[in-house]
Length: 550
Image 1: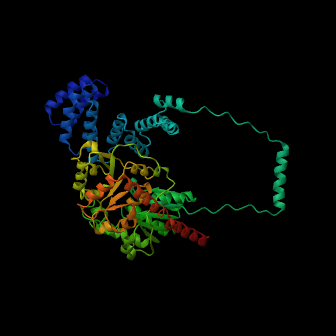
Image 2: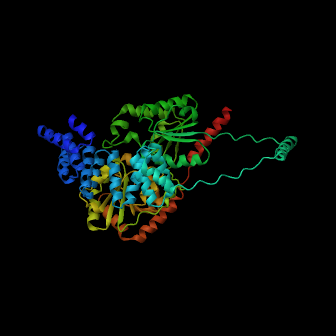
Image 3: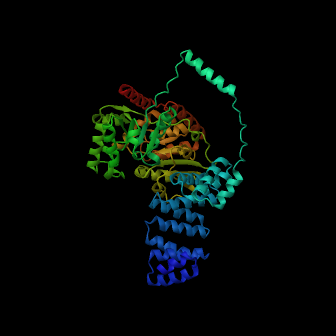
């Protein structure tokens, strides 16, 4: 293997093949040797011969995202894009954060002209890692082909910062960059100009005009603890609003050195998720900062099948004690629903319901979705909601089998896509999670949003954020009739239990006029949910505290 590795580094692929052929005779079931041998055959333009080797390697390591990603590459080289995509999806089911599989999936979709699917993945990859040169170049080329010249130029320049001699990026910048503007005409300062200015200043002083004092800086606000693209959606709109009002705002999973000194208000979600968060609550409190704990789920009632039950829920009593201590230390606790307010009132000094809101200034709420001939049923969620989706799995399969022009679109959890392996590939589509600012366009891929939630103590405390987002997009929905959902009844249909879902979903599939009417009704309701009053009061309270201190 060492000898083969050296030969491969020197590009001696035929010699590498012969060496690995001897190795495979010694260890026929060695996954690394199988992978290396398959790679050699692809380099020698023999992808069909490589496929059985990659298939065997994936069989030996069924939980390895690398093995399935390699198999996908082999299928792509052999001219079988459907199997390549299935292999990439399997890699992502093993590890939803496996970057090579995401990148290969995106490039495969772009090669097929599926830009609406591939470009968001590339954009997410570049946002997560701006140093990924391959993803930066690929995304730049997509923007250039789509006529988005400024975006393309920005990305090509970013590529040149990473690799100054990159030929493709250099040629693109030369091709797309506008010619430099001529220098502005120079104005010559004359003695009489200086005299006039001095006279004006003297006149101002003579009249006793006082120079206006600069306005006091507005309180700085930090939102911490909401890690990941999905969880940050709750704080995104308030953070954007506060920044627009002149506040210095930071949104991050964990506070960095100096954050607690620089900020006036420290908002922490999930304070028991990391020692650094609970310690930040204590340090901020000791430093006289305003400390807020924001909750949008009932951690004390996480069900045993929830992925975080043993980490942040009843399966970890120490974590819940840490949460309760942080709640007791905080100046204020904000929650997303009235039910959460009832459940956590005993733990808080002061508690307020801060309903979910949305950023209406984000143009992606209005951006049209991709053209399609199907009616798309959409589901958005995380691995924590797989059991809720599995609850109506058979109902959805029944609808899809009855209506071949209906497509199921799964966004977020790769495991949710795998639940529907029995559905033909042409009737299902997977979309990756997107950052909060891009998230509204993800919803544009749906015609009907599905929000199934079992009637449990945990789910009854959840907010109607998904219905609010659907309403902001003008998207009708079918959902479980949980307490928070009731206020949105005009925007969709309720299905209480399995067995009720096929009829409700079919009703919206068959009636485009009803879908349009419900979408419009939901949009009217969403217009009433743009309030950030709770966060405005939060900032105002901090300003009063600053003034009193002065």
